[in-house]
Image (tube, rainbow, N blue to C red):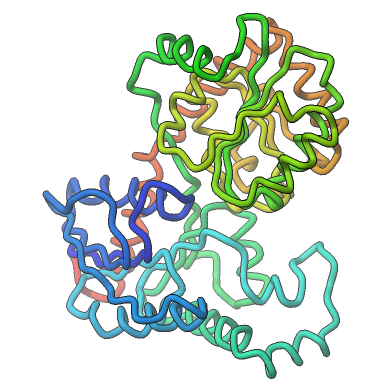
Length: 381
């Protein structure tokens, strides 16, 4: 197949971006993949071809989004399938990495409903809200051969709550991972020394940008409950860390936290860590818990009410938080895994799960959805 892939930033940092890159690399083993993006990482080659989308508007964001949709709609003709990870108007298969815009406006199923009069007032009086709302209505409009791929069942359910898309037009392709290719034992020793973590100390790792949504404040509060224990925390991710530094200082745990920022060598930090913690409040399909488990780092993260990846987790593969805002629950889970014998129980099963949920598996699901769309439109046998 000749595939057009739409993603504004073709990079390995960021959730949707990393997902797109990993899947595209695997699709290119058999198919011709043309990437349409504003930014690229690395060089094109093999069966991957880059097409730079001009970016005359960076702000306001909704104008930039509409421009990307308008420009790509005029330049992706002649492909067997157009596969988008962005809000677009011309596509055959759309990847859904997050909840709906209309759900954010009116409230998601099971959540607190918002005043409809105020919502409609926003839609009619704020250009940004109107633009995103109109664009979303376009990209959830059924057409022959059109389908959607959600990164979790949680996201599929939300989309179908607001838009009449039948199950047969949806696929679920959770994010995958790869087992580490490097010597994690050697990396552990090197990076624990760099992070000044002693042999008897437990190192926690948090990976995720948008610190508020990912629950960093609750994790810092849990760390304060364990301040007398030999525990340290490494925080990886982009965002404004200053409010959380202040929180940590006020709780007396500022010296226990290493702020790494946005890094590419997450594998080194996973190898150095003893426990992964992500008390996210809303995450369609976080990759980091599975990546941690692949590195032999047992995971604590939010249950399926808050995190789509938890749909794939069984007992003893990870500890799932029922109340991710509850610092005491987080501290109890950390305390449980501070016991090496207890921690060991999760390591083997977590790694086995990570091995099963590979990026190759994810790419196969995506490939099947792309082929189905092309076949229904008569473009491949």
